[in-house]
Image (cartoon, rainbow, N blue to C red):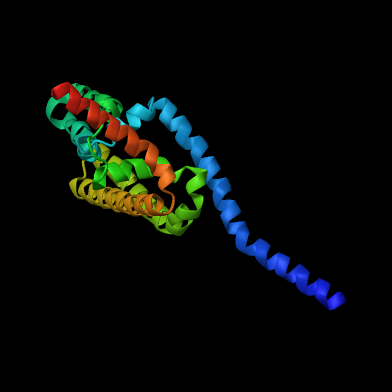
Length: 215
């Protein structure tokens, strides 16, 4: 009887050890959800704003923001203190960009999946899927972050090679991260279609209304 109890305890312990990483992942996702919610609140990213940000034009015009800001800072060598004007314009565009374009007619494209995947990444209900991609996304985010100090240093010290290196590292890291997020989004859409149905329904309704208005 003692041996049976011991085996039962070992089985419970093994099961607990297997489920613990998922529990931890859910806790991390809950923390990330809190951070994402605060970020969305700061940028006023409502459900409508997220759909607008999922427009491929929004994504394509947001990716060049780091080199645009670096160019604005570098321009002080040509226009002096007036460099603050292009720098301010880049900062304003960073704020306006997520809501500058209408929601896309279709979400079946790389850019839309990247944006909506970023939104889903912090959803605790998608934790079981995010778990498989967590290590890759974390590593790619580090690569992305490594380029930022080089961009700042190169822009401020007027070191062209350092600046270009930083922009390449940051740009590749960002694009690769987004590509992995697209992979994650497609996995969620396949395994938990209920989590992606809301945005797809909203996008379809918008497209239908647009067709009715244009008819």
